[in-house]
Image (cartoon, rainbow, N blue to C red; front, side):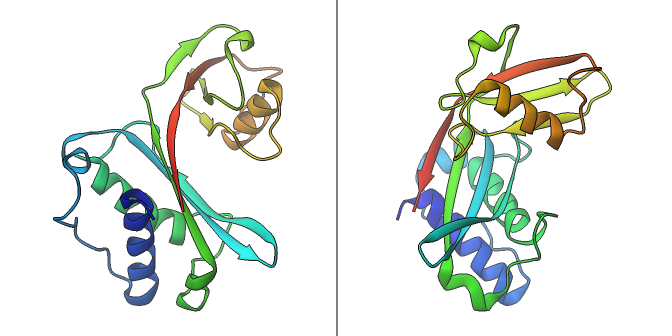
Length: 176
């Protein structure tokens, strides 16, 4: 296990068992304390031979003073606040696996030709501030058009009738 997913796991497990958020550990590498990035924490539940999404929450830009704080915040949110799922309970912890995605700053693009659903995540934004985001390399998402459709739905954006801007970003994924 790597330090990124280990921190996400420890955070989610502690919160599920105690209802408390862990403090930032003191034994992490310097990057955890110095760097600021957007971070997504994704939690999967193993059910037989399948791995199903159990929670995924993140920030596309940093909201905390460092990566460690960002992972801790988003691990709690992914495990407890993802409105698509009930909060994770302590009796399911053994069946969970974690993925942490560190996001590079988004860049605006002007053509879908600049997208690759396996390489780039996307952000779609309207002038009134509604935003939809989709990470790259998502199982079942095989084209930029499909990626835009999903991100737009997440942001409640009608891509046929509303003006919007597109942004792309890359991620570094850490998986268990």
